[in-house]
Length: 222
Image: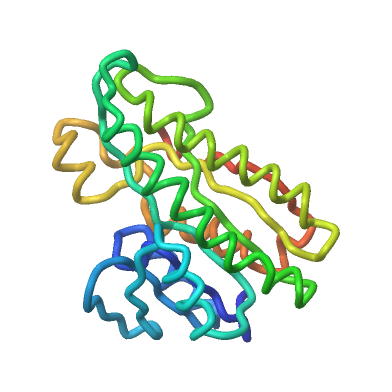
């Protein structure tokens, strides 16, 4: 499905990023793994340590990689918060930095490459829960909602240039942290990282060439 393509995966040291990298590799892609974690390694492809909030660092990273065909913007994060009126600037800024600024920095560097070559695909990660506000998750849902609106806007801007831009909207992902935070939940109803990675890789492939600006729910049984 991705034979002959080079795919960049951000957040590649995390659970979902690693699953996307592994699945893309299994479909024939050359994978470039990008994460802020120092010294992370993988047998799937080259690993690049990069602060994705730093525009200069991101541009240098992509310049070093060279031409590519797709970007899986997996980097992001979640944290519960207090109520909206009790949310401090630091909490708000942290959610937007890890979810929105990292995405914007990658788009700034990657979109001109894809538009210039007249083809390519970008997949972002929103959140099913961010389709509406949720108590004690105001900063997170606001940040993920921004990711979703940027996905739609960018798709509208570049689809005529041969570039597909879409997003997946997972519900609860079955990760070790989520299991630790919710030990009595029905983990079998959650979305497995590997299942979500399959959807991401489809959207990166030529099979999704007619899909533009989609926000694809991936909810499992939740």
